Length: 257
Image (cartoon, rainbow, N blue to C red; front, side, top):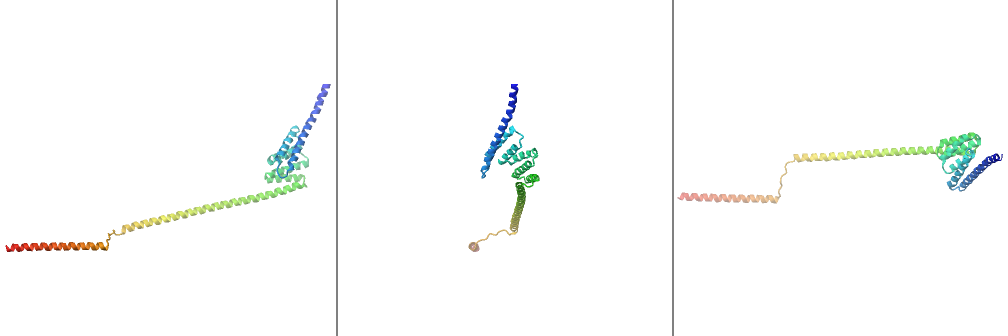
């Protein structure tokens, strides 16, 4: 009987000890989370990271606790991990039927999606939150902000698209201009070549049709040559006269004999 009593006491004490540990981890997590909110000039990822660890340790003891799960997802979001936070908040939607809690989950899910610039899903999440809690001013503001950011994003994309089109047009124009310049250059080069070929042909024709070149002499050279001819002629005449004189003389001698 005494042994049975000790066993019953052990079962009674165990849940109490686990509950104390759970509350201890939650208090630690809340403390770190509060520390992370103190400095509004920067994101204190260290404190929020410690809060995440503490909440996870609490959930190891009580894994189905909805509130600790929300705290965990929020701590992850505060570390600038919106994709992971969105996954955690997405899991919580079906884990509560209480309207305020469900609206809060949709609101936080919308924040996580908006931080990733997933505008349409975030707008859908805010609208679902407002269907449950139509008068929530923060969700209304976030919805309006998400819709404004979506419009701005669409306008920017349109500008970028138009800019890309203009760039493509400029590239096409530059290409066409370059091609035209190249064609014009090729035409000019062909014209120059044709002109050179024509000049060559004309030169060849002129060379073929032109009379053979005549050697030209200077006036002085011509006079010298003429004088030389005259001298030769005088010398020739003198030789002829001498020859005739000798012949006459011989004929005289022959007659006297």
